[in-house]
Image (cartoon, rainbow, N blue to C red; front, side):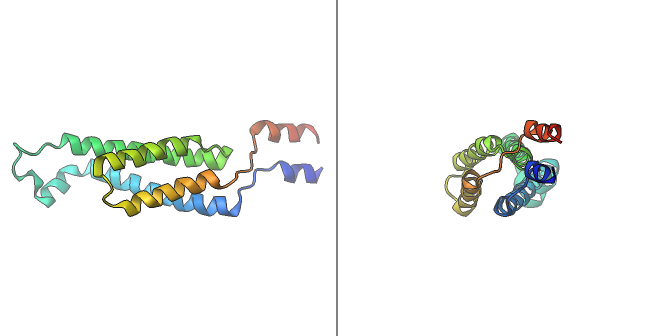
Length: 145
């Protein structure tokens, strides 16, 4: 009976845990940075001296970009929680590709190192095998006791 219980528990492999933890830390940091830029955008603009000529400077496009970057990073973080819990990679891949595409559209290939890092993280998530442990198999293991 104990062998059935230990086999039915969801286990996270070491490589999956290491890559996932690094990626979660990376995307949480970027999301917090984007959220901070959204909240304190007036102070950042004043500090940088961009708002000296308010006729030619418009805050809305910058605010919109920061909002989109925050939401995409937040959805990738949600995807990582889903990845660790159920082993499903679809949310990470979908929003990760959208995030990389938007960054290329907005900034081109300037800062290509960041794009390469994100592509490697997403590729590793795609390549690393996950042990599928659905809720049904855990519930069924309890019925065999």
